[in-house]
Amino acid sequence: MAGNRIYHLGRAGKTDRKRYLMVKTIFSKNSPLKEKLKQLMLYLSRRRGAKIVWKRRHNTVFEQHPEYRKPLDNKTRHAHRELWEPFYKNFSDATLQISRSVSGTDNPMIIPEEIFQTDIEPTLNRHPEAHYLGHKSFYNRWFNSGIFPKDLLHIVKGELLDNEYHTVSADEISTFIQNFEYPVVMKPNQETWGGNNIQFVQAPEELLSLVRSSQDAVIQEKIPQHPELSRYHPPSLNTVRVYLYRSVTDNKVHLLHAVLRTGNNTPVDNVTAGGLVSLINQNGYLHGYALDLYGGKHTNHPVTGLPFTGQIPDFEQLKELSVEIAQKLFLLRVVGLDLCYDETGRWRAVEVNTRGHSIRFSQYAGLPFFGEYTEEVLNYCKNSHWTLPE
Image 1 (cartoon, rainbow, N blue to C red):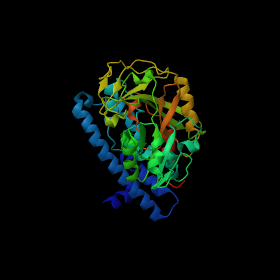
Image 2 (image 1 turned 180 degrees about the vertical axis):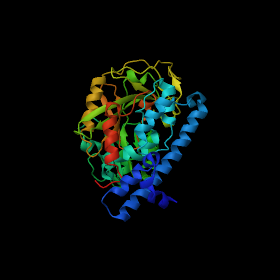
Image 3 (image 1 turned 90 degrees about the vertical axis):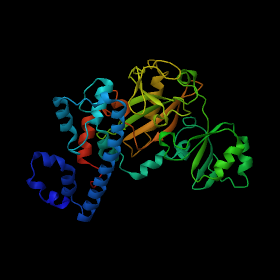
Image 4 (image 1 turned 45 degrees about the horizontal axis):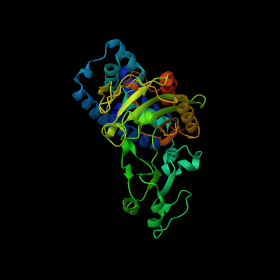
């Protein structure tokens, strides 16, 4: 069936031509047929997987918030589909429906989340080697001292290394960790989405047991946070996620959006662990409400009662540091940084996110993820799609 559809593509109408634009694009390039078929199958597999995942998530949002199901008006829906159908004709309206319901704003430049996952992000960040820049054991090797948390111990492929990357033997480790100032933070070197496997270790004996059972991890100082951010939810380190974009036209780095993340009866601030997220406006003030995992709005923090209207301290310093870091992350056109405000009143970076980006925090607030750069990103991803030869 698929073969017949591709064969008849040249005689298809306008709608079918749109539907199969990416298939046509893949087959139009000057590369071996075997490579074209390989890329096509990989693309269709990813698209199918993304469709399933996002349909499940959107259905959960609609189950919890039936009022978000309100259909788009015809004019908005048409404009939205004109922009994004070149990637996939049968994409869901759900992202824009939720965005409109939460923010009260209709904007056709809102990116369908399944298209971002399948087409946009992998095209902008298409070099697999670039994800090595998200390896936590090397942050302090690449950046100036004091930007990231101080490293105490590295475990890289089972090898124990001190903060200067000297080997620590199995016989030395129990004595070595006695001198740490506890509690310390232990996390995997990579892939800690949603606060996955981040642990706050209280004593050497506990750490020793964890170290002996780990193959890849970093042990870091726990950064005491400033009261200005702690007040939203004292038990968690409340961070700011900043998204930046390296332009495809001139390679300049632009700050897209920033959001405050707070815990919510949780030791971490990740939204998938129960945390809340509030967009930060360009003037450094919170947007007026925070969102939970499935789009529920909170004008005040459920635990502390603080309104999501305050000002983020030293916001210009935060923006400058974010751009400084992103400029050194070569081969990545979209990057997410997690930053905290320490007890001395200084912004520090906690983590570099190279993939799996969450675009909903800005989009559910009515702001397209790429803002004024949406058109250049859209055109670039159509013409330089990750399935095509570079």
